[in-house]
Length: 44
Image 1 (tube, rainbow, N blue to C red):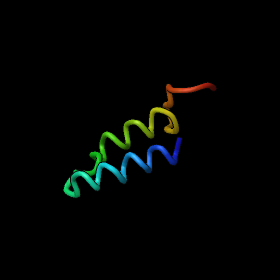
Image 2: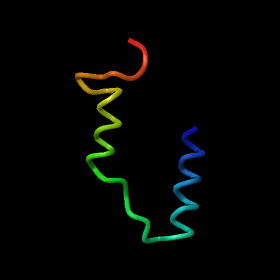
Image 3: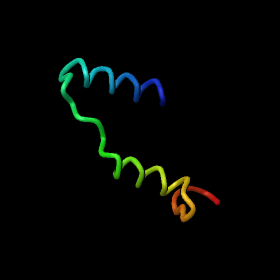
Image 4: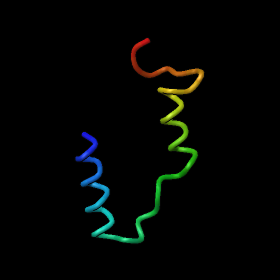
């Protein structure tokens, strides 16, 4: 899976080098939902 995501990211930058990075707030939201103190995604 990791290799596929890296491939997609690489191809995206090849098509458009000016592609913006994901917003920090969105990145933090998705990280926190699984790994944060109030995690609500995945098994316990």
